[in-house]
Every structure is written in structure tokens, then in C-alpha cells.
Image (spheres, rainbow, N blue to C red):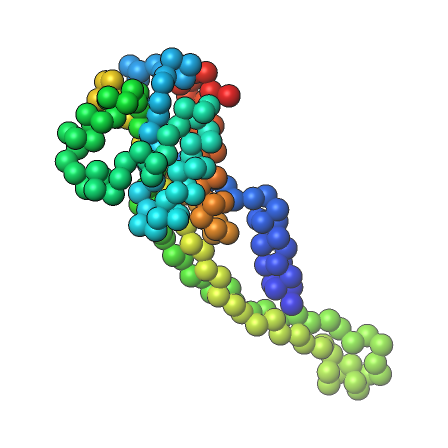
Length: 205
């Protein structure tokens, strides 16, 4: 019973704190400084197989880009996504894009742990001597249980189209997100805060 109550309390605490994405590693180009106010358009790309998931993820990502984010599902057709990169690059340049933000799922790590059961006891002080001697403790058994943790590893890259190079990259880990929307929001928020703290992109709200 104690373990069960403790587990429920921990789960409730985790939910109340919300889904959190932890930055596992990050890199930025030390020679690059970006001012958001000087940028025209930023293409937002989410590499997800499910089209509905892709759209909702890109919408969430674009919301952090001061109104300059353009979701790829409204700009690139499926056939264009499958064409060679030179054609896509030419289209982005012609339409005045300055940068691209790409998010993709790297891996899902599933960890199953067994939490063993426990036996709790309390003394029977209020019985007679013989009852106490032969049954000195009442016992309560709390059965064990399996606890599964799914950790989602997500990579977020930012490319400068003018410089034609990667300027920022981060890998985040998120344990047991309730749904894709909360996972995306947690990752985007974590990366956004990391970028602000690094100070190489200014003008962010």
C-alpha cells in the first residue's frame, strides 16, 4: 500500500509540473550572431510520418518565431520534398527565406523497471499475552509492480540559408509526455530558452 500511494503521489507531482524537455547536448556556431528583427522568413520543418502530427508540430514551433515562421506544409508540396535539394534551395531563396528550423525524432528509449513488493507490520499491543505471543505482528503485503518510462530524444537544428550552414543544434530528452502536443511544446520551449540564454539570437520575445 505504501509503495502504491508513493507511486501515485509521484505521478501526480510529475503531471502537475508539466512535461519537461531536458537539453542533453547542444552546439552553436561561435562566429554567428542573428538578429530576429532583421530576418524575413523562417521555414519550419517537422520530420514526422503522420501528416496530422507534422502539421500540429510545425504550428507549435512557428508560434515561437515572432510571426516570421512559415510551416513547411503550406510551402513545400510532397513532390517538392522528394525533389533534389537544389530545387528546394532555389525556391527558398526566391521567396526570401533566411533560415530553416528542423525538428526530428531521433529515438524512443523504453525502460521497464520492477519495483518489488514490501511487507508492512504493526504490533498487536492490545491483545492478551497468548494472542500477542502467537500473533505478535499483523502483516500487510504490498505487491510489486512494473514501472515503464518512455524517453523521447528529439533533435532540433537551425540552418542559415544565407551562410548555407548549420548554426545551432540541440538534442533534448523528454520522459513520458502525455501526448505529441505536450512533447512538442516542451521541446520547443526548452530549445527557445537555451537559444535566449546563449545570446546568439537577439530580438526574441
